[in-house]
Image (cartoon, rainbow, N blue to C red; front, side, top):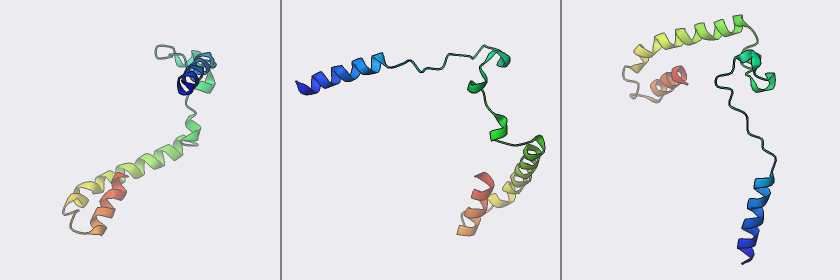
Length: 87
């Protein structure tokens, strides 16, 4: 009986909790979305140049995958090298 009462009180508490859901902005133009609900690209890359440098490194690493795929399971070093390119 106590468990049932506690469960009901818990459900009532949850139901009365402040609604913290984020509205659906799927069709809203970005300029109309509150800034605190948008991505801050500077958290990912501080500048376009930093992004380009990372992209160029990714392209370079992807170019090494075909060679690394050959016999990649033959040694721990081969596994690690392929992993580094796909991580």
